[in-house]
Length: 312
Image (cartoon, rainbow, N blue to C red; front, top):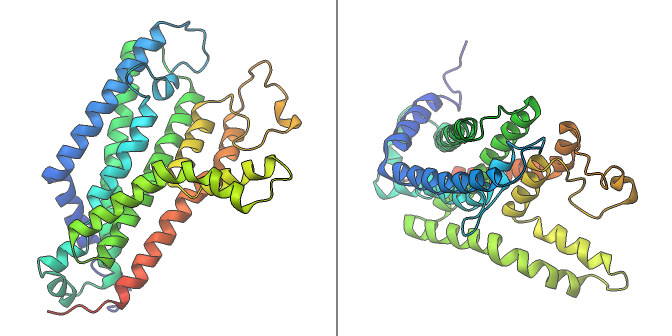
């Protein structure tokens, strides 16, 4: 029997309401249209590039996601740039918007707990992001079948599906960060600007600063030490983790994401692709990092939200 004091009471109500608001909002329609148009252009350019090369590639279908043609970048490059924008757009006013509309105290005066409110908003945003990415993934698969005329292999579908899950997890990091700043800052504009600024810093500036910081901090006796240190520092950026995961999943010939050892060179000369399980194991630390980052950011926001005072 469900107890009356359960902190999850009202979770389904908040989830359904927020999900409906996201899916019908003008903001979501604009962001979705932007993603579809830009990703569609990237896929079209990739198809033209694929048609110019030999069809002997055993993973031809995966090239839809990774091949680029000037002046457009690849499909995954567009996603790495646009998914954070969509996630930030879904979460930057999740809590402070209720404060500014003076509805937060009214919601919490109902049999809805803070736990259910915060979890419901996060799950609704993540579900909206997942629905958008699944629709986009199916659209790319359909366009590929129509344009290339070659059905994908089971391993190609498995790799692309895992890539879809990783993309959703990548968006979850930025959604949790946006909700965190929506709790910390009462102004929605401030929360949006701070989140966007941190996104630009971690995506563009931090990877460029990491090698210099590693050279200053780590001893230079062994040239490989600063290189490894720079790679470790760069992985504090979710964009770096996402890029390395995509490289391992969508390029089966990738044998390592770090220093190359002689044991990893076996078969590399002949270009032998790795099995799916080995590719997943290579990218597993990056995948865990994305999921852990989402959990840590959400927990920080949860603790701060529980300690905030809500006045009528």
